[in-house]
Image (cartoon, rainbow, N blue to C red; front, side, top):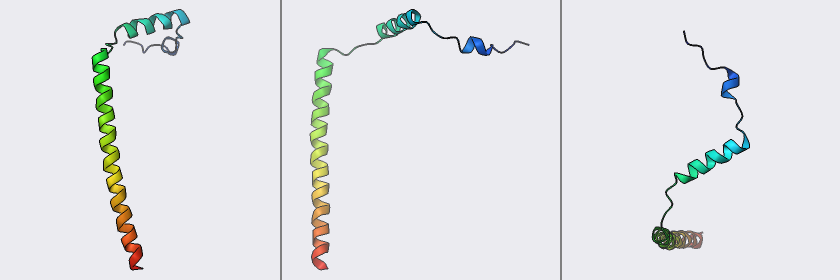
Length: 74
């Protein structure tokens, strides 16, 4: 039977230089967006934010009107 890895092997601490090398290796694998993609995404987020703000303003105004109507009945 194969023995399970020892607890010491699992919990081996990474040295600082090894950690830095691992971080550099992983960040070199990242595909960064182009400037055009970043601008396009920012514009999309801004438009979507405005649409949601208008939607919630409308819902809030509707609820306000309903509550005010109900309060006039009392």
